[in-house]
Length: 108
Image: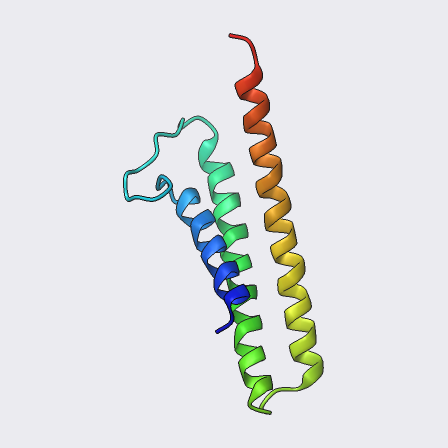
């Protein structure tokens, strides 16, 4: 598997861990407010799971394409879909980080 594919998979799994309530770099659960957070968490979790499926599908079709067992059009379409998905995940991550920085700058 290529480094880019591993990076994509690792990034998606990290986002999934956070959506599951795990803190970065460990198994310690994060403390989250319960009011209304469950709906947002389930939305994020389902989006992350869908992104993981798209990435895995792209990886599998790419491997099949290298072995001449998949149609080239399907491989190109799957890779393009995975690329758009990764760009979306990165854009959402950037917005979350930007929002967090704005919250930190707010006066108390």
